[in-house]
Image 1 (tube, rainbow, N blue to C red):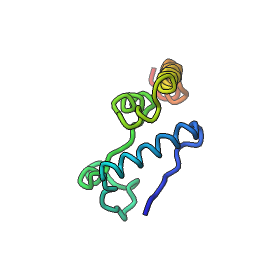
Image 2: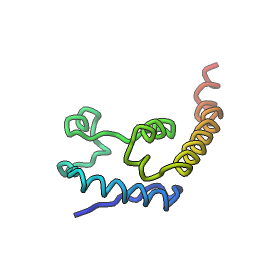
Image 3: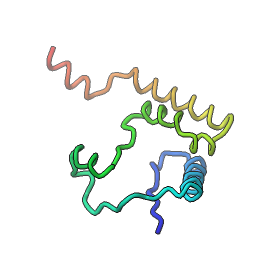
Image 4: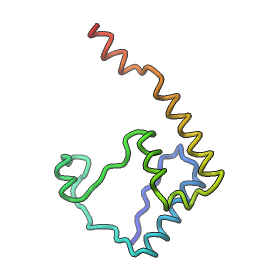
Length: 114
């Protein structure tokens, strides 16, 4: 049995598919098991419950995702050379443009205090 959770619709489908294929091949080649099934709703679990079941969270920001990407040899082998370099460069620029902005939540939260 295989399960594919589709990635974010804003991603590049060609790059995403290349990485999914490479990850699948790596899993087969290295006999990486999918882990034990979890029948509970993980979105309602506490951090401790997830940790006890060995459930890890995905990166919560684009910057965290980029740091993980740079450590992931399987993904890097799927997106080699200029494709990988240009992708990382574009996403770092995207993160920087996001990071330097003041967001509505910050205005709502902090302007009312001061």
